[in-house]
Length: 190
Image (cartoon, rainbow, N blue to C red; front, side, top):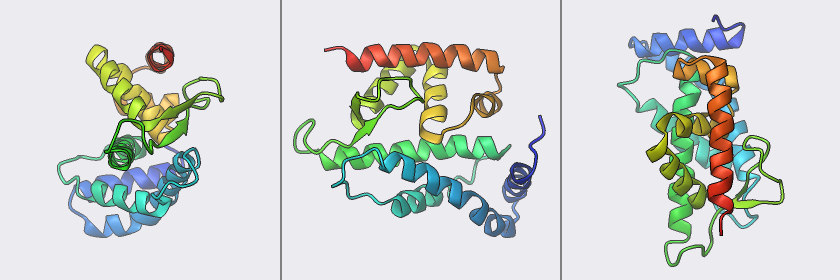
């Protein structure tokens, strides 16, 4: 499946960068930085107003970690944002754990599970709890946990997730539905 427009340009730059062209990284940064910033902003808007992590810091940290992924052979824009999902998740969870290291729950970073996980908008969820639940899901079904990570933390579409994971869109839809239901049960049980 060929990517139209800017996606194709991002893919070409990623491939060139993987092949050692350092100039490709310079051209790539402005193309992906805005999207990373948009993703970071959407996560940080769900957190409490006193949260100290800023979207610029989150994006810069994620981008630095992505740049240091020298062993990765970038395949596409979707693959890049799939890896970005992992980086953003790790940064947010590390920050949340540090914020409430004194006792469980104190100062927890709160996020809302929106339509991405089809949970009632009234349900608040702390990021550490989500990470713990995703770790449990990964122990049961690593593919479903990866799909959640790609869809929730990066906002990839079903089609982009299918491309990154080299699965059919029907499989991603089925696994996504099952994972959402499992996470909802896991995170709402008393």
